[in-house]
Length: 200
Image (cartoon, rainbow, N blue to C red; front, top):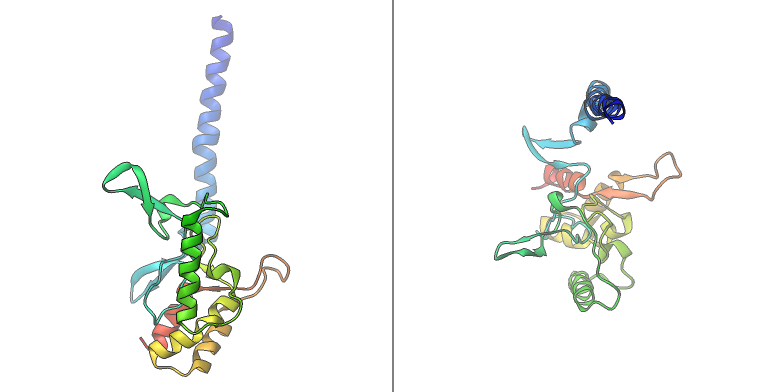
């Protein structure tokens, strides 16, 4: 028995040290040395203060800001820890929605989101990402079509010419990665910060 136990314990210790300590430290060290901004979370600073990340969306509700796509993340209910409540863009609880197409909660949320766009004067078909959540609930991007559908509201709230806002959207539209992967997209935080620089 001991003849089998000793090699097993030696191998367990060796692999814990290699895969649990040496490898993570090496990968972290290489990442910090070669791409420190990305390894540090792609943080965005304004006036020396961190205001967000390129990688994690935020819940913008003010009319002068472009709004992110809906988020299905949640948090523990303060009144009952065994339940959850909606907490959009909760980075500590990344998740999509498990609500099915017949869920009344999902139907009500989508109808409400459509109503917000209609109240802003958006007519016709809405971009899918204006009423659907991402798989993580933390997507920092929206489609260019979604951004363009919000131009009139943002321009009015900031007292800017819609063409100025439209140019900002176009300037912040990221193309497909390597020309083939993904879809064109707009980072909402970067766009909102650019507009703050034009007119807060």
